[in-house]
Amino acid sequence: MNSESKIRYLQVTPSGAYYATVNSQSDDARALLLQLMSSDAPIAYSSEVFAELADLDKDMADALFQKLIARRFLVLSDNPAEPVSGSLETILSKVLPVLSTTGKVVLGDDQGFCLGSSGFDQDHADSLAALAADLISMHHRHHQLLNRDLELMGQSWGLLDPVGNSLLGTWIIHVGSQMFALVIHEQPNLNQHQFVELLSALASRYLDY
Image (cartoon, rainbow, N blue to C red):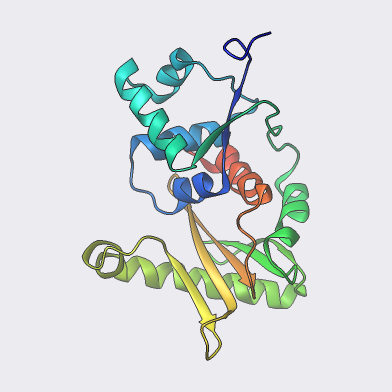
């Protein structure tokens, strides 16, 4: 089989997964990435398939594809990772410990419910999930200043030491109309495929098309 006919698959990267969920503003790139993340099977690339997924004409779809590849939000893989499967509880138990250098992570929703945790005792995990929900609400109240007026991307909050190192960070995640908070003790490890698996699991369960 020559290189031109070799099958390659669309694979969302950690930076692509972050972009897809960093806010809820609709754009073609975010919609396409979320669609790939919520797929229950690897999707082989062709320009025709990509245009159909993006719901764009061929020229616009090709431009979007090149943009996503250039920004490393998307790669073409010979051996794509299999989409995550199983209960959310099982998936979280596998992926959450990898996302912190200390293995201490909490995932909560915007109502303060703890969906999963690693490394913290349950009382502390529940309390941190409640705290994270307060941060989601606070950021929502001030998002016009932070994200529009000051043009700051992201909705992350941190408790820092005197030299700026994170002691505890909170990353707000948007999946459709749902919001979640990922609370990470000390140094985060978000440039890992487990981060994509976490956000894909949330997208497959909570995304409202």
